Image (cartoon, rainbow, N blue to C red; front, side, top):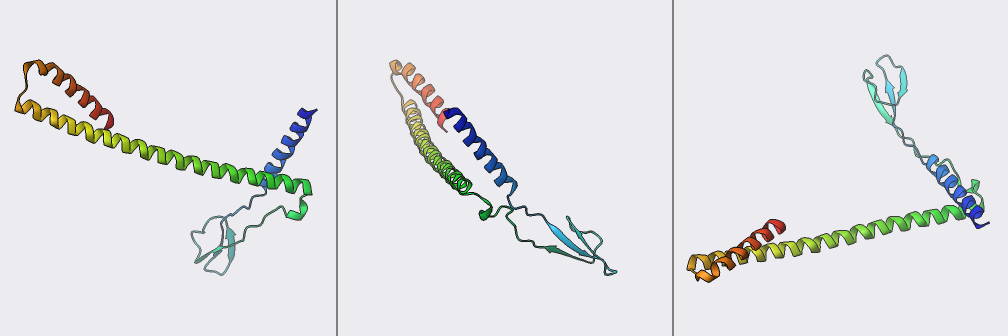
Amino acid sequence: MPCITQRRQRHYTLTLLGTLLAAAPVQAGIYRCEAADGSVAFAQYPCRRASQVKKVVIPPVNVIADSALTAHERQALARLEATLQKSAQDRRNTTQRTQRQLARENAVKADSCARSQQQLAQLRDTRRQGYRLQESAKLDRRQEQLLRAIERDC
């Protein structure tokens, strides 16, 4: 029995959503074209050979009036609008969280990059100043590590 109720509710919701989408205000461009001989024509696009072209502004009209909805449909519409608003707010929050997380990750990478570059400069100074033979392999490995880190983070 609950399946039938859920199906019926889903059917009503989809029907209401379809009706609302179909009833969305349509804003088409209409142009009043007046020819040189005084004749007037209305067109969807601006006329090319008219002496005067004016865009006709038509205010949007909602096909469904609130009074045409039953109380149940108004409640379903209110729930649907609330759900849509919550979804939009959730998307905005997720986007903001993602942007903050990316900013933090970029800051960490920038710090790591600067640190690696500084350590590489110090390592090169050490090589210029001289070092013991036993440290040669260790310095080579460290330089390779730093170069990989710079390549990855910078």
